Length: 438
Image (spheres, rainbow, N blue to C red):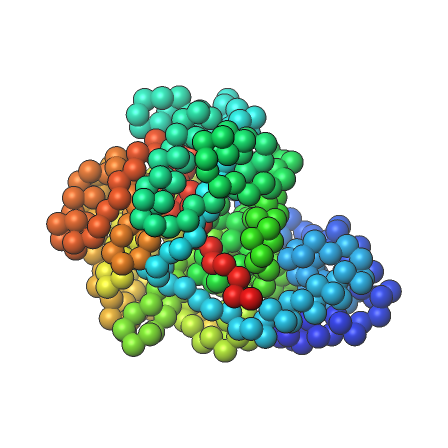
């Protein structure tokens, strides 16, 4: 059953049936499969579990999927609210989703400020949070004041290009408001130090927000903060890859925004790339996103890019696609030593192995390799503002000079040692958004 049919069914469903699905959604009969026990060693970085539900353990699997989706997008808690939410989503979907390629011109960019107590939670638990103990400028990490400095440096650089900057923050947002920055207040009740990477809880290649499902339990909850931010900006999330039905099994999607890049090539050809790895998209995520795009009349090829994982040494792994690939218009930069460079997985009725070179040839896009000296995290993790302007980490001097010399890109260089220490760069720490078309 497709998305529209599921939502239409909800609007006419009996309250008693919806109430059962609501209860199942709040405490689903999930089977969690962890593979951590097969890894040798102590103090290992977190590994996401596989989560499935047997369709026979639900009263009505299709109804569960629909109700769970509406709740996750709207926060509905009663049958009436679920029905109202379904009607609202149908109206949003009728407007058609508009997509934005990675190198499209940006007008609004959001940044996020974790609470001081959240960053303090990381100290002594660096492996758990996959965080460096020391930033590249020699300062201990994480450091709240240093994080604020990094965010302000990014904000000022972006505003200097005529782009509106908005911070999402809790009580710590007062610090930024006193400095004259625009702040949208959001509730941050949980310990979410990685909230400072707002790229991950949603994807920015759709004007109407599409929420994600964070792969790790410790990052769960960031999606709700993102949803609150969007709603306060008059934006309604229209989709979220939640449960993919594979026969009699429902598979929970694992999807994070930093793991997706939408590329537009010659003749308007578009392709959506997503990373496959330790925190990469599992098969459910691209399958659901592809079904959603098709339901919107958008027949876009979706490709999986294999990423190197980790067991103990997470510093050499690649969590997201945007730390190994950066699209800058007619050229896409890659770190071929940190990705499955020659073979991609093409999603369709069945999975197909295809050649990366042929995919980019068909798109009419050149592929280039950046000199591998600098930060393995921020080397290609730049915020593309459009028109050849990219915000990058100033730490990567050789790579930045190469981008300017060989490709004539207009780089806006910013020092972000604390953001880099936490595992992200200029792209991770920002999230473009689009104002409502009402």
